[in-house]
Length: 166
Length: 155
Image (cartoon, rainbow over all chains, first blue to last red; front, side, top):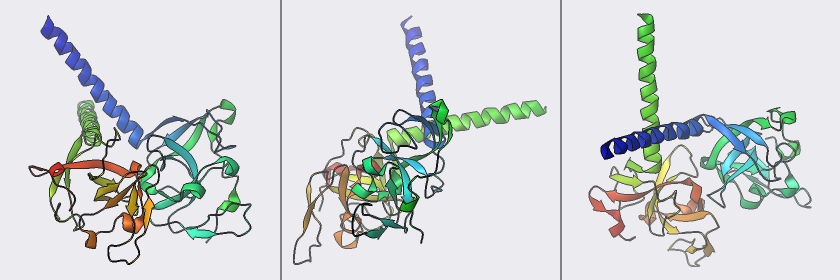
């Protein structure tokens, strides 16, 4: 009787580990649903919006300028942040605030990206902690699911002037 | 006959995906064998040494000063680097070279670590590309062949 219960428990554990691994890999390599919080990406993404994040692009290194990405926070490895890619490696970015008198520029180092939130006034991003290594990118947000009145692909950046052309 | 072959192929694919996922998660959360190359960690780790890397510490945030870690390279996301942790967030580290006249120091920012290779003369590390975010750490090297690397202190 005890052997029976032990066998059933082990089988149950085996299935749990098995499907846990498959679920983890599905999120890691395919994509999943993400709930965003915070005001830094308004108006594109509001707090408590539900979006779909695809995680294939980062493995194929096909993240583009203008993409909204989920990144492991460089200041707090336990949390994720959601920002827009303003510059890729080698691009020229404006590091000063729009209100500054003197504009300063710099180039994004190799292997890094420059991130900014759409809500420039209320966003801690690369203007604060500098360029972020590409390796911290977890996925690319491609679709908004909730709220339903905003269902669909995400809008382009409302801050087009932040993208500096070469 | 065609349905039979199709069924067998799908079952085979199913098992491959299943065991591939389990193997991936085993490496991601437990550990695995790593082959190192390059001179930056000599004499502790020579080029072509085979080491065992455990990947639990980084998930429990228990990486300590002096640990040898495998990190996704901040300058090339496609490759990994192997360095020793010299400073954790908040620690004071020396950012100048030993041959410099004036010594400069700085504090490691929150969420970052300062990495240096044991072979200081032949290592591109944090002295070159700055502090590295903790999130890039992949695992901690704990064994080389049969000797425990925990016993070897930084030279």
